[in-house]
Length: 77
Image (tube, rainbow, N blue to C red; front, side, top):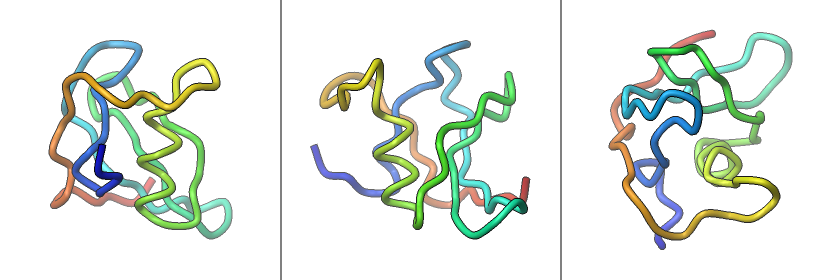
């Protein structure tokens, strides 16, 4: 799977595809955040790392399944 910014999986908690990249205020980095249930993934040094971390489930990176297009959604959080 291409680890692009638009390759983020749906929210593992509520199943929503309404997710965005957020710029973290508590230090440098970015993370993926569900706009529906407010779940936030681990912080990454950039968008690609944030998406890769979001796509990791129980220690293993997810390589297939539905993805949400978040390439144009960035918020501050």
